[in-house]
Amino acid sequence: MLELYDGALHVSEILSRWYDEESESNYGAYIPFIGTVRSEDGIDGLSFDIYEPILQSWFDAWQLRAKEAGAVVKMAHSRGDVMLHESSYIAAIFSPKRRVALEMIETFVEDFKASAPIWKYDLKDSKRIYARERSTPIKGSGILGGKR
Image (cartoon, rainbow, N blue to C red; front, top):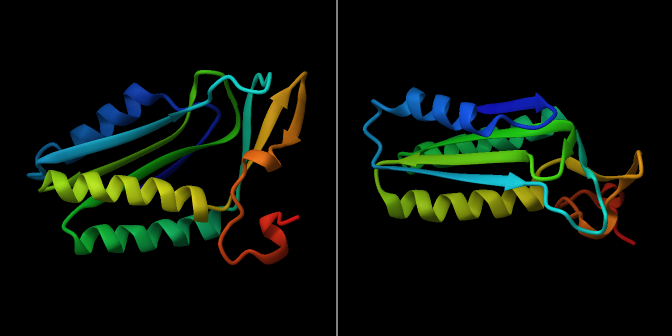
């Protein structure tokens, strides 16, 4: 399940709903990862643009990978502005065994950073500035990857 939201994520509502959705699925492990906007470089927040067709394709591949391991992967991400100390990203793995969930959440989050077509901008002094220094070029993106 991939969910996209305008603005900051409502963490407790999303995690609670996901837990309720899977509560009778006989999973022994539920491991969430919550990404929040932290204060750095004088920013007021971050803003995100998403290319949804590629993100959905990437996520669909992860759903198949999770299913092969007997697990379920869920993800929520923000579009637009997210201010300091608010959440822009939540991922969760549900699995019968904790080791599968622990390993998969780490791999999923790292692959998300390397592969998801999401562009990050700093919000500073009412301006939206591409965060090139803190962005990761997407694998195989060529000139779109922002290589200097």
